[in-house]
Length: 123
Image (cartoon, rainbow, N blue to C red; front, side, top):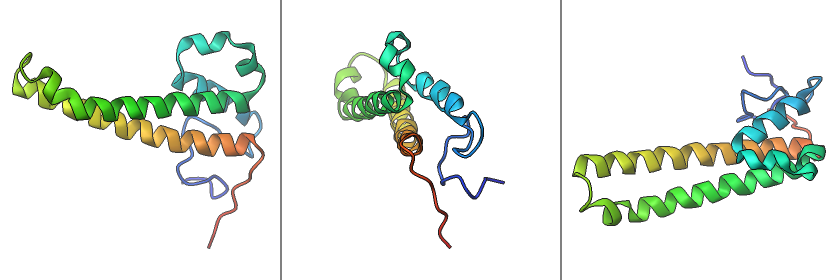
């Protein structure tokens, strides 16, 4: 059962924001959403809220890339691969776009918690 003190949509990989050491799990999860080279930036290692901002922007760029891919995949691959492959590529772009949208919402929740915002459940 989900913790009622944790906002709906909170990532399963991150401890609830009231748990001890939750920021460590948040940082690990945020880094998993980012390119590996982000680990080299000291500002991201020292300031989790900055890492959350970078992760959010990276995920947003992925959403936009998936949308662009959906718009152009049939035109760009239609004469190169068979229709079944094109449709599989469309489905992959769609799944990835949805995954990234959800990740973006989760990043926003984690970033809010890192900024000190607390979730108050509504009745």
